[in-house]
View 1 (cartoon, rainbow, N blue to C red):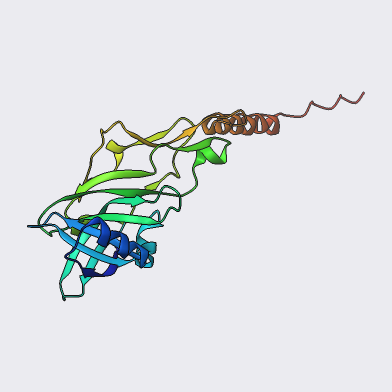
View 2: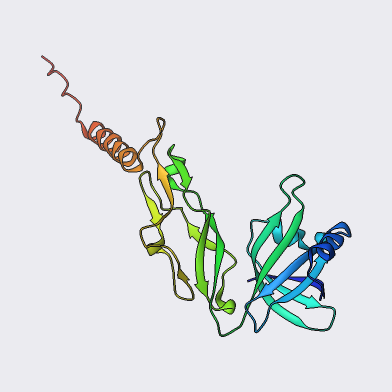
Length: 215
């Protein structure tokens, strides 16, 4: 999985007055959990743009000004209810030998046969929660929808779970092709084409009527 580096400064004072002063200076108070003890630090608000305002999933490398480097994932984020500015971010520390749960975006590739025939693609889950070791976390869950016809669907139980496992039931629907008023079923279309071909073949094999005998 791709990683984003956040350069931060460790802080000792965590009171409300100190936190307010940091926000006024354009800094975001952050806390890293999961280790022996919580790590409090701050970083410029702009440093989080590629991490927060994106549909992609990333791990984070927190590089502190004391030379310490910590691997983490974004756990929770608080926004101001009016200005939508970032107020606070919680991170969870990663360890190579410990599994972590993350929401991974679903990427659909290919052109569905059902959609080409007028069906409607419905994305029931745009993200799926998986659990794996940090080194096995995928950037996306890729699903090839090319073979899907009208009425077909893809469930979690059909997806590859070799390096990670899904925290959903196997019958959880990820995407499906729904019918519409203009939809034409692929099988029906193929049957019609076969019928037309057979009729043409029969017409071509007909023998002309014999000419009348001359007197």
